[in-house]
Amino acid sequence: MKAEMKIPKSVAAAAARGLKLRRSGYKGGTRTGWMRGRQLVTRSMIDTRSLADMRTWFARHGPDASNGGTSYNGYLKWKRDGMPMHGTNKLAYRGAVAWLLWGGDAAYTWLKTAAVRTAMKAAFPGRKAASRANNLQKA
Image 1 (tube, rainbow, N blue to C red):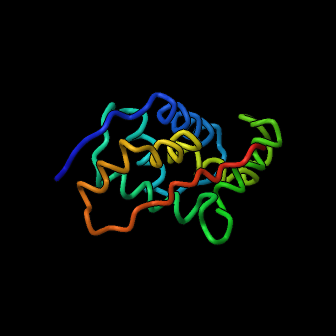
Image 2: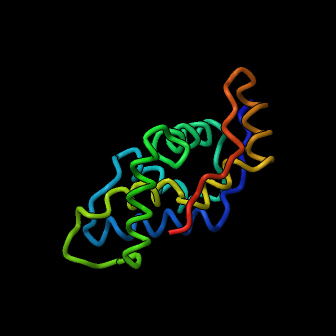
Image 3: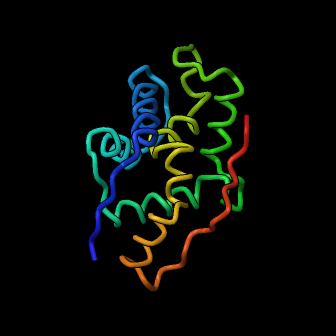
């Protein structure tokens, strides 16, 4: 079953910010992340395969990861530093760029909603379900 879901505006806005940081010369993300950011910004709908890929990325790089989430920790540093959009140290916020390209906090939270969980279960019945816990921190 290949269902599609509407991409929340907050997810698209976070991805747009990540793309803006990249255009401003900040390093971070991979080709896959840049493509994901463009997908989240330019499309109104997303398929369950892409949602599954996003959930996998957040499990490896977000606050649920066993290492504390390298991208998420970089994002928290960027927030603590005032969320700079222009600066001289273009390497300092690689994690923030990656986190935002994938939709940031908004996407992380959205992927844990009942609607997405239900769609994922229908599309991938044998796949392990994501944790329901929201482990985002306040910076």
